[in-house]
Each structure stands twice: as C-alpha cells, then as structure tokens.
Length: 338
Image 1 (cartoon, rainbow, N blue to C red):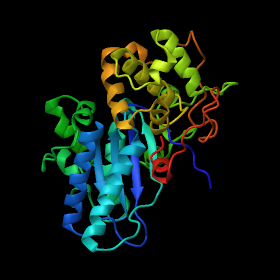
Image 2 (image 1 turned 120 degrees about the vertical axis):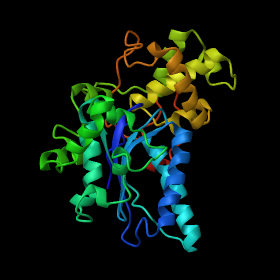
Image 3 (image 1 turned 90 degrees about the vertical axis):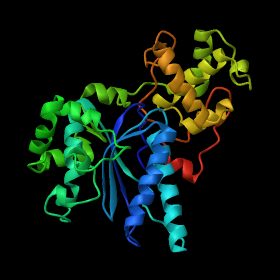
C-alpha cells in the first residue's frame, strides 16, 4: 500500500497524532511520562520545534507542533526512537511501541490554533477517559489553566489568540466550558474537504504545495543550475567541500527550494550536495534570517516555473539531467520523509 507523501512546510503548524501498537500501552507508569518529557525537550532544543499543546494517553500522543527547518518526520523519528529505546531498556525487551505511520494535518495557526488546542485538551473526554479536561493529568490544559508550569511548552501564540493578558484566562475558561463541535472535530482530524491534510484557506494550501500540476517536474539539477546563475557561483564549487560563505548561501537556497517544492527530502538533497542534513538545516535557518528574499517561492520565477505540488510524482524519481540518481532513503528515512 502506498502512502501520500509528507508535505514539509517550514514554520508550519501541524496537528500530529502518533498511535501506539496493540501489544503494549505507550505510557504505563509515571516514569514513562518523565522520560517522554525529557526526550521531547531534547528534540525541541535540537530542531527548533515548538509544542503548543499536548495530550498523552496510553494509546496515542496528540501534539500541536510548529516546526522550523527540520521536517516533522525527522522530529517525530527523533522523539519516537529515543523514547522507545528508553522503554525497551527499562523493560529489558524488544518490540515496536508505535505504529510506523503518524497522522498529521497542517493547520493555519491564525485561523485554527485556538480550535486545535481546544480539541487536544478535550481528547480524554471525547475518548471517555475522564469527565472533564481538568480531570486528566497528562495534557497541557493545566498549563493554560495556570495550575501547572511546563517550561518547554509554548503558550504565547494561543494566549495572544485569546486576547490581551487580562482577558486571556477568562477567554480560555469560556473556550473550555463546552466540547468542540462534531464539525470542528472532523476538520481538526482530517483537514478541509477539498484539501485533505490541510486545515486552512487557499494561502495555506498554496504554501503547502496544492498548486495546479505543471507539464514538467523540476529536478535538483535545474534548481542548482538556476541558483548558481542567480548567485554567480559555479556548480563545481557548490558541490565541492569548500566552506566559503557564498557557497554556503547557495547550498542553503538550493536545499530550501528543493525541499519546499517537494522535489526531494532534506536527507536526499544533503547527500546530493555532500553535506550533513542537520548542518545544512542550520545553515538554511541562518541565511533565511539574513537574506529572506532568496527564500521565497517566487525568488527566481523569472528563471524557472514552480514545480508541481509535493504530492505529485514518484518519491523515488531520479534526480534527472545529470544522469545521477539520489541515494534512496532507508526505512528510517522514509518514515522521516516530509
């Protein structure tokens, strides 16, 4: 069975649901929650990701996650693998703790963050675990209710959505006084009817890659060629081991446009450029702040058309013009694809 390819949206907000297997619960004792919090904090520091809300049931993990340049797949792989290894060491046994595939919906935070947090905090009630959100101890509801401090939780965006500082607490209580509607539950879980996996308006769908199909598919070689022309560097220098700043910038622009346009994953383009993906990701973040105009989808539309949406085409399609094929992702990397 083939899966729809992940959509990577730098800076995007995602509603993520990672389910466990039927063999064992994800969390069985207090130490498990402490281990998960420790693993999650390390992942947040390493990837620049933010968690805006969470709910940890024994059967599934629910997160409102905002990523930076590192893809959601890499972030989830980090958290899942390290947490699972910690549990396996404690139990002294092997076996899968999570289902391979997680569910993810891209969410327009300006329009739907409030509804997403509302839904996540109501999950224990909707699942029949407790009678009210306050009765469930393992969610960020208590942080928003100001009854518990969670240092790694990012609450500011949600609180700004609720109003000014004086009105925020009352607005949150009013929001949580009623459960989410059946219609909103469906939207948060699945996305908009016309854009499954995306909850937002046309602008978010456009950023996420839902564009009309083009007659040709862009390749990394085409991106490299046009970026080299634009920045006046040579392809040979870009693919060399040189660490000159102008070449680091070129590689960052190439990697950003290649991944955002859905042409290749960060792991694939990093191997193609002869770079480490984590280092390349940090370089992208650094140069996006310094030269943001180069990191826009229309940065060089005068040179080449936009590629097809990220879900168009085969994920294993070759890199094209130069006759070079990408080093195909391993099983773990496929789990981390965008």
